[in-house]
Length: 169
Image 1 (tube, rainbow, N blue to C red):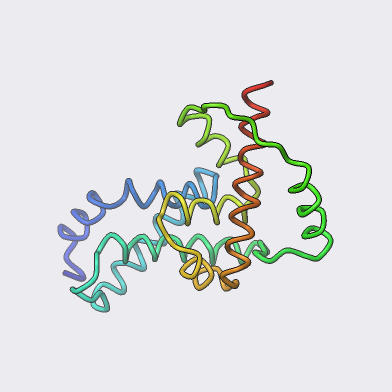
Image 2: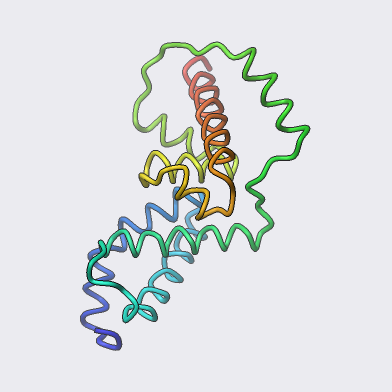
């Protein structure tokens, strides 16, 4: 199929919407998401011969999109590890945090996710929205399973704080 413009266009039509959403969740900004979508499809078409027919095509393409976004973030200096002072501050905040039982709309949750700091947004997107487990997230981001789990817990806590502020403000 490589080099067949009609077939490539059909693939684009089938997968561009879902892959764009992945890029947008990972990067937050429309122009960056559009650029990463284009880069993703260039990589898909370039590496189509390496796709193994025994795996899921969408999973393969989505992984390319996620890796493109992560590489883009890395070039911008986004770090997925936390420094010690931030770790201590987060533990202190965890001890003080009391969760409210409020129902949120999908729109509020999406807006909250988009307002998370980059590392948190990516962890929560990979875990909740893309369905990766912490081991896979660790491999994708180059962090340990425990870092993925703790970052996810903190991202979830931060998301709850953002949602609570939206609901009360």
